[in-house]
Length: 79
Image 1 (cartoon, rainbow, N blue to C red):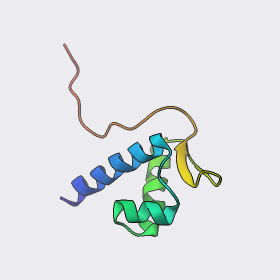
Image 2: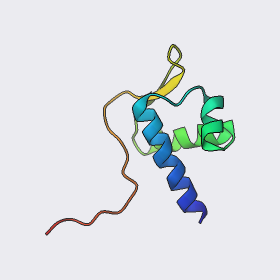
Image 3: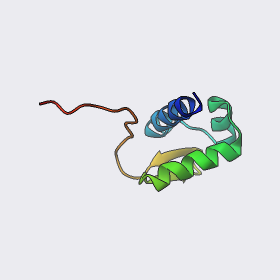
C-alpha cells in the first residue's frame, strides 16, 4: 500500500510541476501532506528518472525545464 501512496503523490507532484503551481517547498509539503525532507526526496527521485526539474525563485515553484510529464501506470501496446 505504501508504494501506491508514493506513486499517487508523485503523480500529483508531476501535475503541480507541469502547472508550475507547487509553491515553495514548505507549501508543497503541506499540499502533499509530507515533510519538506520528503519533498526533497521526491524531487531527487524525479531528477534521477530523467526529469529536468528546476525551481523558480520568482514564481516560488518547481517546473520542468523541458515540456513533458510522467506516466506511472502500465499501459498495454495496441496490437
